[in-house]
Length: 190
Image 1 (cartoon, one colour):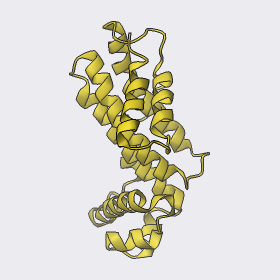
Image 2 (image 1 turned 90 degrees about the vertical axis):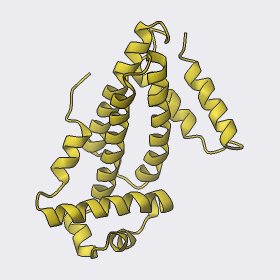
Image 3 (image 1 turned 180 degrees about the horizontal axis):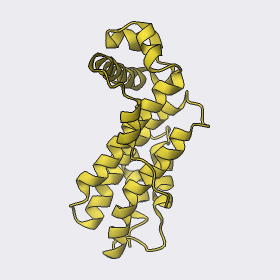
């Protein structure tokens, strides 16, 4: 697998160095995350600027396009997913993989709200896919070495399986969603 810069590095490259500009950037990111979680991909940029306590000019200075803001928010989500892989790595192999997949399900929900409005040709998205797979692969490998997971399963297989189930919108309720997700995750287990 190709090694790319971690999401945290990519985020830091986007963040202004001057303290006041960095505070505005951080406020816009927090407001954007909240607005997209509440309103989906149709979140208003003017509303995001207002929530952050800055003018629309400050938003556009930091994020010249809507895609720039969405990519930055997406990088933050991928960084949190990668961090969760590190956090659970001390657990037993199957428990570590399962805990990371639980984090991944939350990520999938956020991802859909953000990506509905994003240009799919983004190089950032390609880098994020690599970061995500690199974060989960050691957990899968440990579980395979412990005899907990079928050795023929790849991290790409697992991500696609869980993404597919997590993205289904027609579950009767949260309990059914959880049951089906458990069926999918347990399908990779030996």
